[in-house]
Image (cartoon, rainbow, N blue to C red; front, side, top):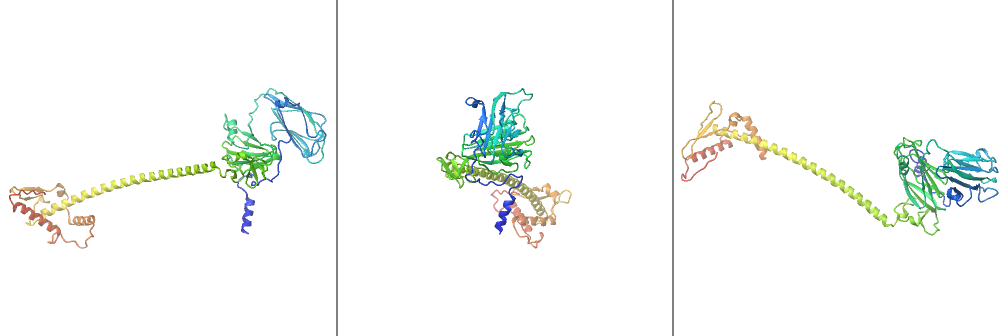
Length: 501
């Protein structure tokens, strides 16, 4: 039940955006309609070999054939127009709006060019003259009630003087190959060469050999105004460029593949002056239906046959899966090249990020090390000053003789006397810092705590007083005083003793 609901939702919802038609389903095998079976092109070269007349049905001189479609296309030379004169003996099945049998005449190259008339009945249209170089006629009949049709002559005459130049035609004819690629840029470069915002109306006509159909895919499809078909749209025609033969109209974010059942396809792209950014890439392929009985054909999946020249050409010509590129060296090389490129880009990104991280980390580490060194130097200087203050104060106030020396102002210890081997008195003066920063008991306790922390000792819960006999500071002062006395009366007077304070 869940699978059924999922399939139902996917079938009903379709794709987002504007209506680009149904999802592509492979056309019925065996269905083919030739676009060139009854087609006549009248130009200057034709007149070199043939007469300048034509009839509605060249295959039936008396009554035209049922279910017939015959195209007459006229192309005059430069600065010429087309003139067609119909014989008064004119007879086509009459109906409302000429919906059964009719002759449709267009003033231009295509079936969507301006309509001159849709004619049926027994009233001859007489003489018809085009406004430009091209004239398009399509004679179509149903399967009932055939008549005699028509007979006409044509000629190319000088074009009348124009007050304004004829607009530039944007048309491209693609033929002679079983596949090919093209882009909208071809039309953009032609029409918008001087004005980047000029409106566009360009058409590509694709012709394939008889018995071949046409598949077209869109590797890239980006329109300037998404879901706005009035601003920009792409139209696909099968066989004839008329509304009746229009297959698809794309104006949203994607364009599914399209398949013609004839050997001719028209691609028309229209864009207003406000639609300036359009990127569309197209690839077309000629194919036939299975079974692949003709020589020189290869099997391409469950439906298609391709010309063997398309095998291993570096493009996916098969529908939905690249059967034509399997087992090809260029496929392996292309895959390897793609993988190598991806690896190179990835490694480049990784190395760049790693280098940036290393540089930032090293810089941060250097800055922290420099700051830490400055802090340690400042702290060491402060500790040295405190030690000097402490030692100077202890040496003056706590000596074994109990003497107290004072400075001139009587507040701070000023000097202490001693003797050396030659009996000359020596005066040792305290640094100016000891005079200015005497250490109090509170500062001394702080200093002891700092020294314990620097040396990694556990803080002592009970500190021995500096004035008690067991105090390490008292023992250190006694040792220093004993050393000075021994220096004054040495046991070996013959030896020179150097004392440094």
